[in-house]
Amino acid sequence: MKQRVCILGSTGSIGRQALEVIRLNRDLFEVVAISATGRNQRLLALQVEEFQPEVVATLLNAELPEGPRRITGENANERLIQEVDADIYLIALSGTSGIMPSYLAAKTGRRIALANKESLVAAGRFITERASLFGSEIIPVDSEHSAIFQCLLGQDTPKVKRIILTASGGPFLRRPLNELERVSPQEALEHPLWSMGPKITVDSATMMNKGLEVIEARWLFNLPGEKISVVVHPQGVIHSMVEFEDGAVLAQMGSADMKIPISFALGFPFRIESGASPLELTSGSPLTFEDPDPQRFPLLKLAYEALEEETTLPVILNTANEVAVEAFLSGRLPFTGIAEVVKRTMDVLSARRVESMEDVMALHLEAQKVAKEMLNEAV
Ligand code: NDP
Ligand code: MG
Image (cartoon, rainbow, N blue to C red):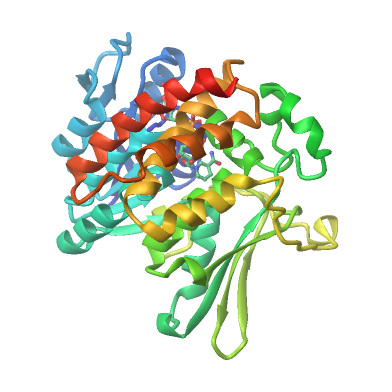
């Protein structure tokens, strides 16, 4: 029996690579539904022709080949999850648009192959509680979390001393600090190792991506912040590590290719063909490690601070960051203004309380408004 796969965000970097993996494993998977905004009509149309899904969901009214049932409108992703019965929901939407779909997928009792880290950052408690209540398994797609998941297989989790997330350091690891204010969106979008969507690429340059991943790890592996550390490893050969209480450290290595964690999340517990190029150990060597510089990457520290409080501050951190990254990409905010906007929005809204999913979404909207106001002050 083929696994029925529903891909949310099929036209994005993760979505396209997931379809590449499925193309190599036609005997194992069937694409039953895909979604996108509808902006990239051409690519979506090609995907519909090739994979013949039963359902296509778009926010906009895109012109697509006849055949699949259409879901259109602002809540298209949410409706897709509620109306399509799949074995695997791959959530590859970018940013906060993934929060509600991940929460809804947690109720299906099926597998969630989760790429969208923002949903766990903003609503990790509610999504993981609901997933365990309804028996939905969350398999991480994020390469660091996939690495940790793999290192933990067959291990006794309480004997974990800490997990170590590796970070490439992004394009500005060696850039003189006084030049950071003037770096352009184009420069920030040139990641040395990975080719990804624009939002996560900027997050990698500020290292907010690692901050979000620390919070993501807290919910995926149920570990407190002090057991989650970050090390800069520019070669990107080790995707993350787990240190156990006896002193042993397990690492997962591989080429910097998201098709490896994507294929793992789709195929688990089996390893399937991924199409990734093999790891060239000698060309990646020597492997180096260093501590992240807090002055260069202030957002990483802010993420740890947010995590201490667990529910309110991560929502604000995540939303304010999204607003600020968008402003940076459209030339309305300097690179160094991103951290400023996030910090100030957290200061303004820190007294709110988040006790339910409704609270998460309400605070998200409020943080969006406040962060947008902050933009004018930060320029
Ligand atoms: P992209 O920007 O490349 O793709 C996002 C996808 O989601 C596109 O299909 C896009 O549609 C769709 N989308 C965006 N916004 C909306 C919305 N509001 N409603 C509906 N659909 C929407 O992102 P990535 O693939 O890079 O990243 C996806 C997620 O995976 C992110 O959370 C990221 O952090 C995470 N991730 C990504 C990695 C990577 O290598 N790319 C690595 C690890 C994690 P359209 O094309 O029509 O705009
Ligand atoms: Mg990652």
